[in-house]
Image (cartoon, rainbow, N blue to C red; front, side):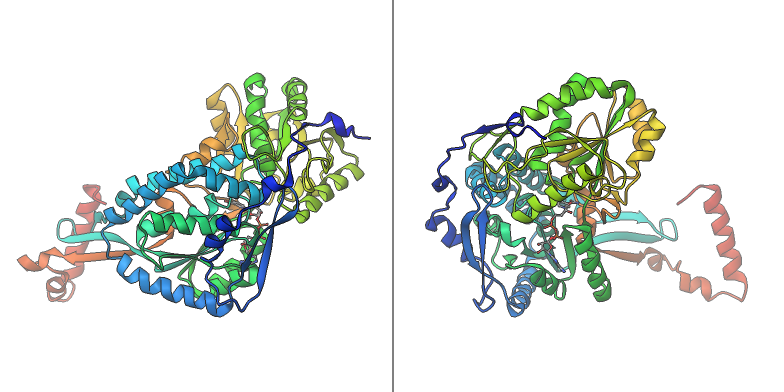
Length: 536
Ligand code: NAD
């Protein structure tokens, strides 16, 4: 039997429920921004800390979605001609306002998702980082690129990035600020318009983004929020020129299929079952706090969370001797301040999934080293940070994404075995390797099938390195976000070729006007010359 009281410690169990209620003067101006004709019904979100109602808002009908995209398209035509420096200026101001007004959005994120304030702050930092990055570097990403043409000096080639038009962003609930912005900011910088369909549970944060973009000077119509569930997301795909989807692999497959039928681009950021390897030479003392964040930030409801701990047998006991008590000491809580290490799960569904994974593992013979309990004494959806050992390979939690504060331990005898275990998954989003020998860790990383590998870190350094591509292999997605990769996904390449020889009479047409056989002889000589000179 698991000792409930020994897991974590409750802070502020007496918090009055009134702490987690939003005033009408906060909610009303936000919900007024939903694109709705009030014909599609309403949705009531809850505050996960208490389970009590948080906000009620009207949903968007199919006609509302079509109308939003039409208005976005009209606004985008002029936006595309606004000089890129001016578009970058909006992003710069947006980033500053987010930092200045962070307490507003921190409250919204916490009350919509139930996460701790320190996890919510990661989103504020990310928003500022993304806005700054695209404001400063974006114009360079968009600048035309000169490339070598067919005939050296005689052929001028430039590749331009043109906006795709209207980008439909479909986002999950787990990082409502970050995932409202990851594609929105580069899209706006590139001259696109955006229609965002957030998860119904986190619509207020999306609407706050709309308010702040307007305050930052974004012209009307360029960023709109439609509200609703999967049906509204599916409708959005019918109208837009590119779909930027973040969510589960199951939904991602449907989104990709429909985008494929419409022949519009789709960027898919999907689920993961991320491994974290602690090698024999890891510095266990410094690794432990880092691994805790990797597993339990946002209560493990993060695509980059580590859910599989792969421990080299030489270091496993020492690691667990430090890791288990530290996890048990994590402070769970619901405060709108920085006192809690970990918050709640988002919903009853999420709690049910976590409990099902843990129960299934225990029924198959797994052991609980920490957690394994629903902390209803703190709030309806709190679940203790959980470490499972001896989890059989048939268990759900070894194969499927749990998306909660549950990590399973596997011991390995070598780096080779670690690589094999790390790659034993249909997913390939992210992995971590802890080792004091960075060269060795790089060699291991090179054999891991994942879009990113962090050495001696969980996810934060990767996430914050916004100039580098971020995304998954295998069933974890298609395409990349961040940096130049975002701009490439959200624009069309247009190649413009100029015949410079025309002015001096040296053109391909003149060549083809020569006698039979001569053009190919001349071209063959030219191609040999280019090969010898190693011209591109
Ligand atoms: P989900 O797939 O259920 O929903 C995501 C979004 O898609 C929601 O807005 C939902 O309303 C919408 N949607 C549902 N059905 C749709 C359809 N048929 N057509 C269009 N839209 C539809 O995912 P979730 O449970 O809300 O989010 C958790 C998942 O997101 C996890 O798997 C997590 O790993 C993943 N995620 C991935 C990343 C990443 O960057 N790779 C980031 C965050 C979350």
